[in-house]
Each structure stands twice: as structure tokens, then as C-alpha cells.
Image (cartoon, rainbow, N blue to C red):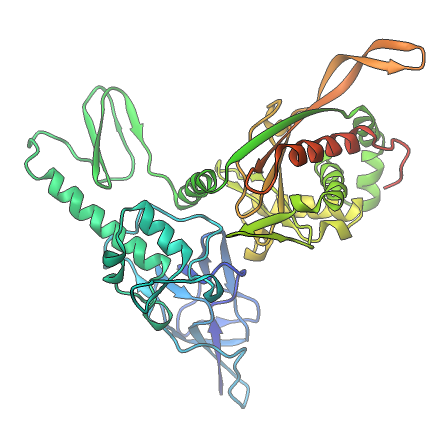
Length: 454
């Protein structure tokens, strides 16, 4: 019998490790090709890992909650083949990090789009020593007040002993716990510290330890611990604000032609193409056309270098049933016609709601659209989805009386109006470019051809 190694799959350029959430198969269990063996979680998405062979699980190498680098062998499968088979070359198996027997994970999660283990090309060296530190690690150290000498004393589990994101967050967590314990010494015995995740108190004094601070609440309150995804979202938003100086421009568009065209074709479109036509693919189509005219909108910043992306990958912010937010990506949107865009939009939205998104479905976005009008908002001031440099918010479409210019003079008519707002990174995009691009998108929507085919 042959043995096939099941390895932790690669899940995007910036994802270097994953946490094991659940094993669906145990040693001795039969498994079919592409059958789910385990569930994993990354900084970006939860997903399932399928079997790469048919046979019997012979060995499971890691436990639930272990953090495992990509490319590491996580299980072995015995097959009926006569020769030993390896799906792909793997690195020597490193030691996984289990937090079941260590201090609890730090509550300071880094950005959902940040690298877990830095790219060597982006690493920064310590001028006073030989260790290398990624910009991410140095940024966390600066935010937490960790000096360079203190950073040098942190044990590193990365390549050649380098300090990874997990290492520094583990250190920060332990340091805060020690500081918190010292502050609690000497406090009155009557002070009530709540060590559980969710507590409801009515009319009593409630204290909750948060890192190195002790916060006291009074009255009728409910304390809810953030779930993992909400922590990632919160940190991603805060880091975006710290990273980019946000500027938001606003515009207004008369989308009457677009609304009337969709109303006219939507039944035939669904019958013919097998999918619904919503407003989102129409917005994506307009944005793509404008990005081609203003390519700097489709860029990112790497230090002092502006990286203009040739691929146009449009992210669409999607609300999940639990209230969290995720941004699946339409890859190469400029190469799709309206039917292709509609199918992509609907498939990604359905997969997001059903927790079936793959890691690659949310990676490599270059520009994001968020439809705040879905929930009735007229406009919004969205936060940039790093490392992108701009995000467009489309508001609710409302009928309003407006002044319309005609060959016979001005008149008042009932039109379908919509507000557009775009936040952009002022380090790269000045107000003139931001406002010009936004106006171009509004003009694309206003000049929509109501007689067009799909």
C-alpha cells in the first residue's frame, strides 16, 4: 500500500498559516477523493480541506486549535497504489503552535489582509543586530511600546528564528496578562471580575478585565465577547484608518434609464440566463470602464512605490447572516460581459451567505464596491479595504422631483436618483483625481443605454 501526504494547502499570497478547527476524519476512517477531512480557519476565511486521494486515514499529525504553516503535512492517507505518492514537495514539518496549554491568544488581532509570515522581500533588518523583522512585526511593536532591545529577546519560531506575527502577539498577550494581574493585586475584595465571555447583569456593579485595564459598568448591561471574525474586521478597519488618510467625495446620479432597463429585461434575463440581474453587476461594469480611464485608482502603495495593478479585481462587500462582513472578489472583471458579471455576483453572494467561500474567493481585490443602499442608506463614508486605495459606496435609489433640462427649457420630473460616495487614500489620490473618477462613474450610470442587449 502507498501513503499519500495531505498537506496544509496554499490559500492566497498573504496567508502563511491556518488554525485547525475540526477534524471530520480520524485514523482508521475511510475517505474518498475530495471528501472533507478537516476544517481550517485563516485570517481571512474559514474553509474545508478535501482529501487528495481515496483510502484510509492512517495518521493525524495535529490537534484542534493547532496553528500550522502552509505546505506542512497534516495527515497521511493509505491507498491501494503500489508506489508511494506525494502530491507536492513539502517543507520539513515545523512545530505547530497550540494555545490550549499556553496563554490565551492576544485580543489584538492584526489586519485581515496582513501577512502572517512576512515576504522576505519586504523584511526590514535591525541596524544593531543580525535579526530581521517584517514591517508588520515592527508596526505591532511600535503600537505596543516594545523597544528594539525587548524585541530582540522575543523567541522566534519563523524561518531562521525570525519573529512572526504569532510570536509577537503571544508576547503582547502574556505581558498584558502579567500587568493585569499586578494591577488587580491590592484591589478591594468586593470588586467583581468577570472571567467569562458573556454575562448579563441587572442593576449591579460589573467589572471586566480587558488586557491591562479594568473597566467597570453599572446598570442593566450585557457583555458580549467578539467572535474571531468580528475581531479581525474591527482590527482591519482600525488599521486602515491608521494607514491611509481618508478623503471622501460625493456625487449624485440620475439612474432612471438603468432602473427602467433592468425592470424591462429582468424576467427574460433570468429565464434565458438562469440567474437574476441585480444592480450590482451594472455598477461593477461602470466602475471597470472608469478604472480603465483612470488606472491609478486601481493601485496600492508599497513604501514610496505606487503599484498600479493591471488586473481589475472588484471586491463586493457582502453582509453575512450573523452580522459580519466579508468581501468576495470578482477576478478579471474587465474580461466579463454583463451576463458573466451577474453570474459571478450571484454565485459569490450565495457562497458567502452559506459559508462556502474559498480563500481564493476573497484574495487579490484591487477595488471595492459596497452597496449601503441595500439597507436603506442614502450614502456612506466607507473605510478603505487595505491595501487598496479606494472604495465606492452606492446609496439607495429613490424617486425624487428634479430639474431636467430639455430642448424646450427646464422642467421638473420624477427621476430615480442615487448618491455615490468614494473614500480614497490621499497619499496617492488627490481630490481632483478622486472627484473626477467619481464623476465619471456617475456619468456612466446616467448615460446608460436603455436599448442595449445583455
